[in-house]
Amino acid sequence: MYPACAGWSGLTSSARVVQRRKIKEKSTGLLWAFAAATSGTGTNAPGMAKGADMPEKYTSFIELMNAWVGGAFTTIIAALLGRFMWHGNEARKGRRKFFGIELFWELPVALGMAVIGESAAAYADLGQPASTGLIALLAYLGPRGVEALFHKWFDRRMAG
Image (cartoon, rainbow, N blue to C red; front, side, top):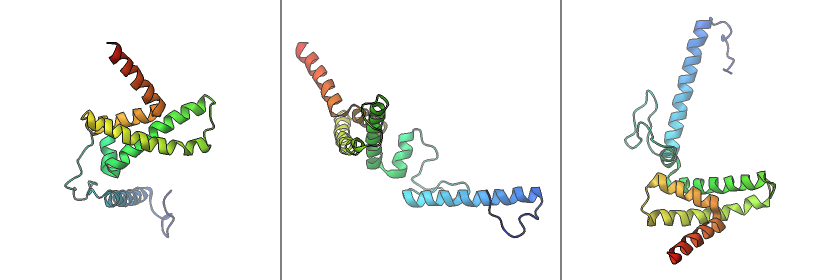
């Protein structure tokens, strides 16, 4: 678990605990520094200066995703997750293989549904967490599911 170094076995158990804590603190600080460097949002690690644009706590998983990878990648990730959930359901029912060429064809559908979902969210004036949820929902439904919902809505509107 911890690196074997000269004199490690000669330490008392309390000295080993102190040494492990030091190693853990260093690795935690390095992870926070790496996360801050890759996300470009500053740092918030214990013992490090707080970044000006990184909040202390996130209120949702989507806010965390937006801070780490940005809004565009969060949208794409939500669309891909929606399509993968649908694909997994189809594979569970035995209609397709889980790892097959069908999985490749889900990528353009996910990207298309992300564009459609983002447009629908902008039209409805939804905020970021709600728009990401709408995108995941529309990606799960796919083009045929959205078409079926649209026809159902349109038929009700014409009848009433």
